[in-house]
Image (cartoon, rainbow, N blue to C red; front, side, top):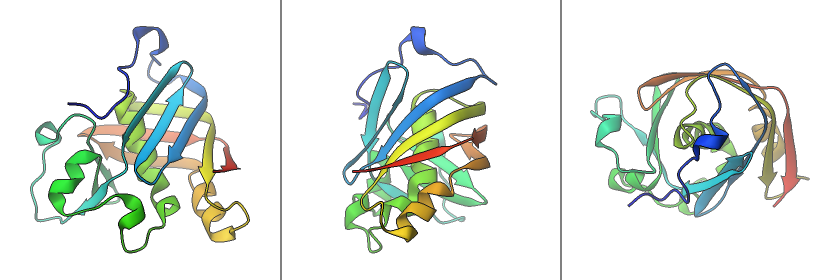
Length: 167
């Protein structure tokens, strides 16, 4: 059973190379929630880094689980990460969920079916403490251009602005 709340309706599809004016992301403790236009969904807030020698195929992962590869670091996001020995983000040793916002964003885009060139004009996200410069800096780092392979598909992501709000 998928952990996503809703299947993306045809009416909110974004064609490749189109701009998404606003994308919302809340990398929560147990669920990360996201959406754009009239579409909203969530996936379990689990993440596991997969060692390079371990074979993982996106087709082997359960619904609501995504494999993001950024600079040769492979991360599984969603309930399928539990099989790789992880716990919810807030229970991990570092507990710093803001440091993993980029991988959560990539998994969110995959859950929406957004691959190829993706342009987000404004990413709206939340932070546990907007007065904490480390947390804010980690989220602001999402602004710019990013390249990744998610579920075996190339994603060229451009985020023009990041707006951060208190949780």
